[in-house]
Length: 574
Image (cartoon, rainbow, N blue to C red):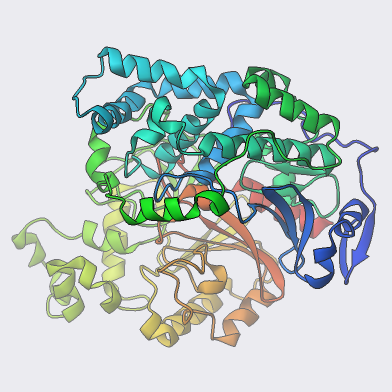
């Protein structure tokens, strides 16, 4: 998320442009290879090479994946709060605060009504006293947010989490009450993190937004990053952080200023964070005795307000898994939209939205008739005796893996129903269309059928072969609600939903991808949080292909596909 745009934050500087050298056959900037030699452990680490580190953080380069990552080192504790899931958000917030402190504060203020909703139960947990939004206690706690920048950064990060994934579960006082928060260790963690990233960006030609790390000014720079509208959300050696640093507590300010002066050598900060070596046993006991104060986000969502704009201006807007429950789309976009299934759970209709739509499993329930009489009509009668259809009517969650594969007549009926509700949208049910020189192929894959993988991949091969139709040149993007297979999947291999068996076992599919100009794949289905990343580039069939999974949330009303498509053109031209 960015708060403001600054022109030229990545302007080429001849003095900083590193020459290229080779390390074990991998082409890298000379400055990075020189860094390898500073750390003896790199000699015994062929893959993850240390580039920069201090007592608590390090930057590593993965020689296989060819990417950079910042990670904390063993002893530092991010948070004493059990099951605190906000670290990535708070790190992003720290970068945004450095870049745009006033805009960051304004973002927090715009969420005042939701912060008060969080503060009230936090006060009750500490005092057992119930207070209203207009009470002195709530006002005092709200004002305390702006008295300490390190706490302010935490609140900003939790609001980013709130806006991307819904209300925060397990609302604990340490998250929203300053007096309780000082025992969590998070402020010290942020202090060390800020200290490290400022040292880092002053020392090496990299950019970071608190999650991603990119090389600058080399032909290894990620092209989609170079063209991205969001590159001004990244901290670099050119970023002006003086205003933000001046707002930090004096001891933090002095430590960071010292780090800048001697940025070629990473130094530890002044204050010590929570360390596992010192507090590990105590923290372990706290976690064992922890009683969760949590409810499902959907249950608490009604207590919060959406304070963000729902208007989206992406030129090619990708969005999936909206699961709209009130009969309308919760966002607007006047350009071209790619709706990747599970859009509606309430007979949503929209006469204005334009673009394409692929069928997800929830659409199959959403199009079903609401009355018993309509169910007996000619349109639905052919399916009434099918076991999968009976199960779909009785308990949809138990029917998904019984669904028919391919171009079944039932999907044709679903397509017809959706087209009535979205008259300016083309439903791609195993069909294709061309938009601004790019071919989009939509496959009806409502769910991943691991136990029927061979049958499903046979259908994918047959349909792709037919739709590609021996056109080897047109740039093509393949869209399906569930991912085609693991190789083109945004799901983490650490996820419980990831299945090792769902790989591409059909060599003819890989051959099609290799022969044709397939540049990307888009899917939904797995509800991957936006903070986990909405796109990546994978290597499949001997070439690089982008993968996008864009899940709707209040802040993420869609993903801009233009940058990825354009970067593909530029890479081909190079």
